[in-house]
Amino acid sequence: MWVPRGWVETHAIVPPLPDRRRSHRLVRVCDRAGRRGSGKRVTRPHAHVPVSAILLIVASVLCFTLLDTTVKVLSARYSAPLLVWARYAVQLLVMLLWLLPQMGAGLFRTRRIRMQLVRGAILPLSSLCFFSSLKYLPLAEATAINYGTPVLVIILAVVFLGERMTRPRIALVMAGIAGMFLIVRPGSAVFQGAALFALGASLLYGTFQILTRTLANEDSRVLLFYPAFVGTLMTTAMLPWFGIGVEMPWLDIALVAVTGILGTIGHFLFILAFQRAPASALTPFTYVHLIWATLAGWVVFGNFPDAWTLAGMAVIGGSGLLIAVHERRRAKGAAQEPTAVD
Image (cartoon, rainbow, N blue to C red; front, side):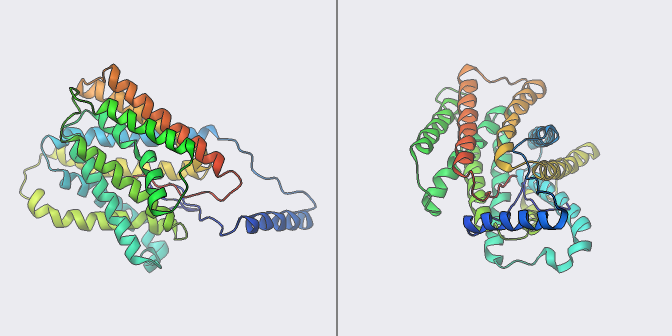
């Protein structure tokens, strides 16, 4: 998909300036240039979140919920690698048709090819784990576990990027872990081996976000392209063992194609949203995904979370929202970090 300004999955990638003082100097230079060129003072954008951006985010996570719901329906009959292949092959096809005529070989060009390939492999592996979990776990619970990613990102950032573990971070991480234990507790429907797939998906996605930070200066269209490219290659190699030879009616073929289309549309809506507002301001609205997943699980599969699970979902969602607020305050006045989504 085409990115007019620049963004990556499922998000906006804004390369950070290397020096905050440089950022301030650039602002002053632009202000002076604007006053000299037009006689008017340059108006800086307000910290307002447009309603259109919020609606785009809500619509985007609705697409992802419909994608997960369709995958859960199909997972009873088909393997996870086949469904992941459809998810990324359709997205790759759309991106090649849209971006290749504009960028040519530039779509593949990167200064850190090894890192791009590793990052491009991690996201499909995360999808593979999550799709596998959907075969056995209720939709809402699997989605809630996957939303433990912000907690894992903080832990991974401390371990691999040397970031400082502040007291608020420690408290929010502990709260997020407690929320996961409320969902994956002895006696619950989620207390089974399949929960490890959901936890693995969350861990892999957190790693994906950390790698996205390290590649922040790369072209965002290239960042968006490599997971689709590598994911298609990886899952195509799995098809002889997990996909080929299965008879599939036309309705299921259509549903498999829909999974890729929904993922592509969801990513595109995210792009449009993050072009209209900062990532830190929009992140809290992504938690509407938990509401959509709960409603879809109830309507389509007849599964409604019990009180303990709802409490765990609330704790995970609340800790994630507070993490977003806390990180936004810490980053106030500094360059925006990249956001990465499936």
